[in-house]
Image (cartoon, rainbow, N blue to C red; front, top):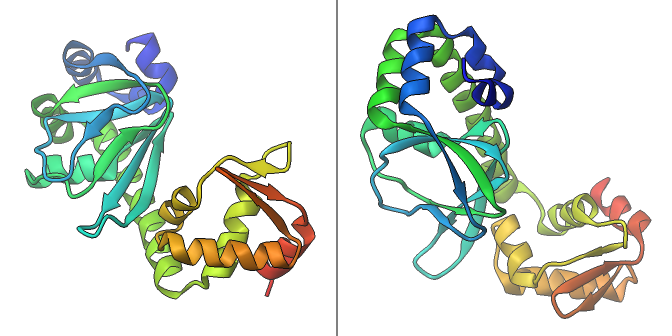
Length: 219
């Protein structure tokens, strides 16, 4: 097994020799600059993409321009939408953007289907990743459908604050992460500012009272 492939995806060391040969012969490593579209909503899927380094943001954009981040594909992970498209021969229903510089292992669709059919170890890898991501998406649906925006916003702020007690993000960035409208986020941040929990600046949120935000998360 290729040492670089095995380092990023140790599960591939379980492939039988013939399957390992197929993977090594078909796969290639690519580098994608920041901001590169990895796939588009409505486009066909030609490759199984596995992220070795970096992060791909997968998001859905509505006709009115509203966005929601569905998940991120990071080091050692695959994309559930890509898997679904390859299995069903369907098109993508969301878009993927390289959030950082990404190094990825690209396996052509034909090789993916060959490996899926002949290798138990490869099937285990594919469907284990698929099941994990489906669970994450169900949690996201539950949060968006039933969660309070103020509680979700407080949790997001506490989870993303840096060592300088600040978060570099616009209100629209945060709204996209939470799957809500920018106006909703702006209104809630203003309330947090009124309580003295945050300070609002252009493109930046300063955290002034983590305890206050934390108390809201616990209610």
